[in-house]
Image (cartoon, rainbow, N blue to C red; front, side, top):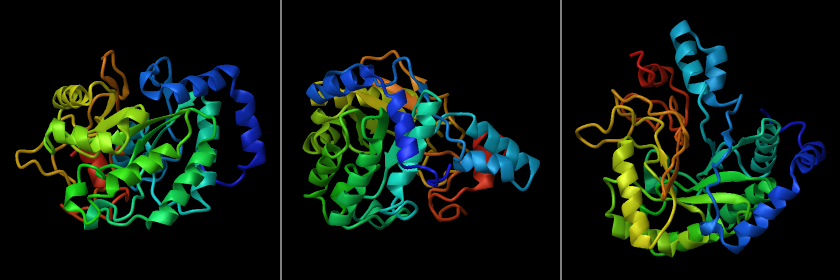
Length: 321
């Protein structure tokens, strides 16, 4: 979808779809966000008709490319908000349009917000915004969400990578401030690394400093390939170190587990994991496809620029190569 045609008409339609139950949910969440019920209970996850996979399914150069993309597009996958693609002035209308489409489908959208200063600390996804424009960008996203329900995974790698970044001391506080600007109806999960990165106790310290007690919980395995069982155990250990908590796990490409060398960037021989959906687990709310499978991690292992659609990877992830 595009941002055109949104605005007052779009907002009016969403206002009609929003019910008193949503308003009540907002009140309850504002009072006790971490104690509220799972945001995924009884909900259908949103599938964007304009995801990279959906577009490739319509426009792929070969039948194999279109088939692989169609298989990926059939699963609900998170939408990433990145300032280089959706800068200030564009991100709000784009989120508004997405939420309007999700509301029309009675589906729950999952957004990944990825624009923190010194993003990826000079790695393959380097970029992001300076502090003041970053917070203004977050405010624009928050205003577009308004009173609609949504799930937001906030700043992959920002906390686990912090100690390798120049702003290690201030980064958790910035994540905390960004989270605080998002609406009460938003189920926010701070990124919590993965099971082979930091010890659970250290990750819990970083999450606590970033205000995890004021949001729904944390996310693990974003853009990584650790197995679901490893991540489920890790999520329980982090939650225990926090004195309680909730999590989501990225299973978008963990079907074959991690490689022997523990690399993560465009790792060959990986496959997609299980279908996204809620779990019956006291800690893990859901397994999700957060990193869109088929999009490159960066210029490693022959891949294009980070975030760009890579047909060969889509074919391999679906078992076709």
